[in-house]
Length: 598
Image (cartoon, rainbow, N blue to C red; front, side):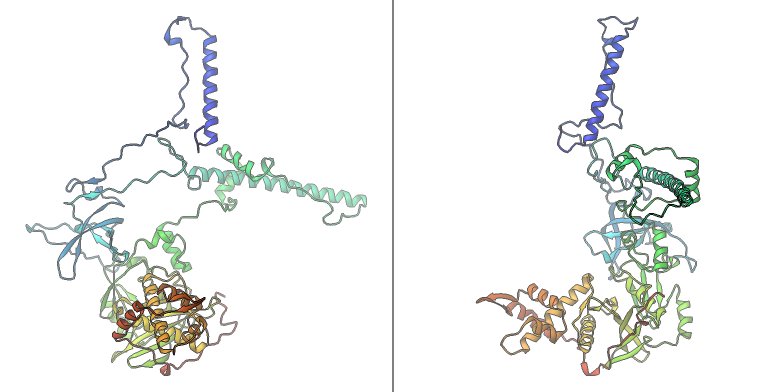
C-alpha cells in the first residue's frame, strides 16, 4: 500500500478488479458460436476503470508540461490581458516625464460616466499626430517591488503593449488531489453544499413530524393516565431518549452523508425549501461566508464594519485623489465612500466640516454657506499656532464619521467608521487668518478595559515628515499623566504608526536616563515618569540592546550607538507639548453616557 493513499480509493480499486474478474468468468462460461478456443479475441480483458475513479498511482507522477509563461511584445491585445498578468505601464513622474514600470493587474473595470460628470482622461499624444482613441477600460495595478500605497487605477492608454507580458501563474493543486483527477474541496463545493442543505432540510422535516406525533402520543397517554387516576411522575424519574438519525454518533452520520449526497426529497420538503421556511442548521466546520464586492460595500454602509471578507474589498481602492484645501492627495487604501464617487478623478473635501463633493462648483457653493472655521469641539490646548480640540463622537456624529471616512483612505488597519459614539476625538489644527486647518488626530475610547490611551492615530499625508506625529503621541501621553494612568496604543499599529511610536519611546527613555543621576532606577519608575506601559518600556529597552546582566543583576546600559542616535535626533528642531498650556480635566461619564446602540 502506498504511503498516504486514501483507504477508500484502494477499496474501490479492489472492488472494480473483483467485478472485472467475475465478468470475465461469466463470459468464459458462455462460449460464443463465432469464436474459436484459440482465438485471441475470446480472451477476457479486464474492464477499464472510468476516468473519475482514481487508480493506484505510479511511482513517479506525471507532471503536465507548463504553458508559455510570457508573451513577447506586440503578440497580445487589450482583450487578452487578464487579472494577475504582469506588464509594463507608464508612470508619470514629478519632473514631467514618464517612466516604464513593471506592474501587476489586480482588477479591470469599464470607464463609467458618473452622474456628476464624465471621467476625463487625457491620453498621451501620438508621435505622428493621428487621433488617439479614448480609453474604454481601467486597470488597477500594483507596481512590482513598490509599496502598496502606490497602487492606482490607470487607463488602457498607459499600458505598454510593445514590451513582453508575463501570464499569471497557475494555481498549485491542493493536498488530496492527484494528477489528472481534481477532487473538489469539501467546504467550497456547490454540489456538496446543496446536497447537504437538502439532506438537512429533509431531516429537519422528519424530526418535526416525529416530534409532533410523539407530542400527540404523550398527550393521549397523559389523558389516559389522568382518567385512571394515576399520580404524575416526578421530574427526572423517567427519561425519554430521542433517537439519533442513522442510529449512532456523528462519525457514522458523516460517513453516510458522504455516500447519500443525492438522496431524493419529498414534495413537502421541496416546497419548504422554495418558501424559505426551513433552513439548514449552522455548521461550525463550514467555510466562512464570502461576500461579493457589491454586498460588501452595502454592508459597510449599513453596519459600519470593515471586517466581513476584508481581503475582498481592501485590496482594491475605489478613490484616486482627494483635494483638501489647497492640497491634492492620492488615496492609499479603500474607503467606503458612496459608489457614485468611485469613477471620479478627484473628490473635493471641505477643510472645516470634512464634507465631500464631486465638483469644485459644489464645493464653492458649500463654502459660502459653511459657518464652521474650526473642529466642532472644545479647545483644550493652545500654544503658538497649534491647537487641540476635544470632540465627543456622540454629539458630533456627522463630523466624526466624515473624519473616519477620510482617515480610512490612509489607514489599512482601521475597521470602524460608522460607530463613533464610544470614542473621543482629539484633533490637532494649525491656526491662520482663515481658520483652524486639520493636521491630524487621534481617537480614544471613553472607557477602555485594556488601558489604551489611543485607538486610532493619523497625520494627514500633506503634513507628514514635519514632526506632527510625535506631537500627537506626546499629547496623548500628557493626557494619561493628567489622568494618573499608564497608557499604550491599541494594537495592531500601522507600519508608519509603529515606526513613530518606536522612535518616540526610544527618545523619551534615553532622555529620561540622561537626565537622571547615576544610581538605581527600575522599570516601574520609568513607566511612572513617562506614563508608558511596562511592556512598552521593556520592549524598547530590548530593541535597543540596553538590558544587560552584570554581577548577578540586570542593568540598563546606554551604548555608544544609542547615544549617537539620540544626538542626531536632538539636532533636529521639533515641537514639544507645553504642559502649562493644557486646560483639561479628565471627563467623567455616567452609565447612561456609556450605553451605546440603544
